[in-house]
Length: 177
Image 1 (cartoon, rainbow, N blue to C red):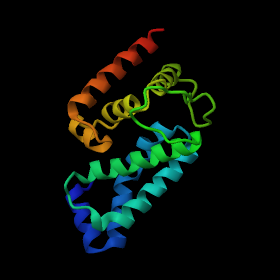
Image 2: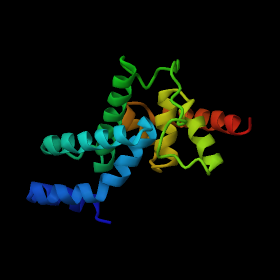
Image 3: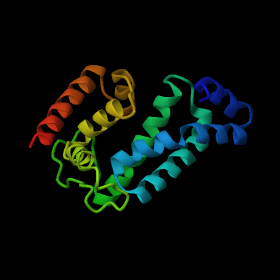
Image 4: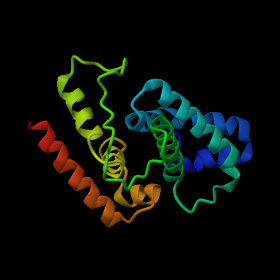
């Protein structure tokens, strides 16, 4: 694994080759971050590709005010929300606690239904409001710190921590039913 500073330097030295390095190092984690949000493989592929196009086009605007990882996840999260919003035909807000369409994974062709607990966990996560979903996924799966998540979703670390703990309690309750 290549250090983020080395990736940044590589992109700034030679944008084409440096960007190949960035994609090689970050594609999989970005794809899975988006996939957990949009659920469907084709949507995740499209949003991941669009994320990297946006990264390439705006890399010269990256000033290092946040880490490369946070900057990438912010763009990826926005792309995932755009895909979800497009699918719903309205604007999605991560602050919307009224989840009108729970996106269950029952129709997803890439799901391993033999793992009943994993399917139940995914359905529990998808039953959460968007902000709690984002927070839970980024903390649990991506192992991001609360301050990193706060920077990505435009919140405060204390609010993110509260959202994570509320989400975790809801998931536990869901899993025990």
